[in-house]
Image 1 (cartoon, rainbow, N blue to C red):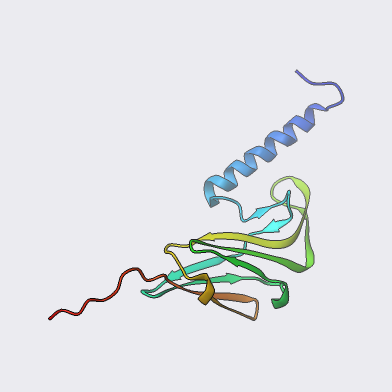
Image 2: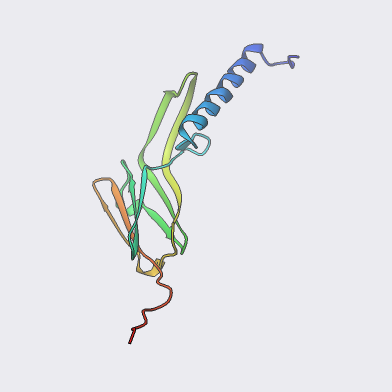
Length: 143
């Protein structure tokens, strides 16, 4: 059944878009962008040592002074506007217009950290955040 004012081909376009998004999620996991909000998810690496967690993110087209980090004991949140808007006229199989204006990501940390002692460094488009772990307990000498 076709509703008034809508072409049959509009339904085919909508179905094709939904199939494309389903395949992207199936093969690549969650998409690294949200075209409805204009946000990209940066490439991220989380490494853990005995005493700290290091989160590294690629942030091309971002200025250091525009990076906003929020750190809690169990997560890190990044918001960073791009210097210029990135536009795509054709995105995927079907033609559609997308604009991206910022990076956004929430990283769940593998262990509790001390946010007050965190250190961040931004160089050549790469953000590195060192997060010291919260140490529970203490050493007991054995006699």
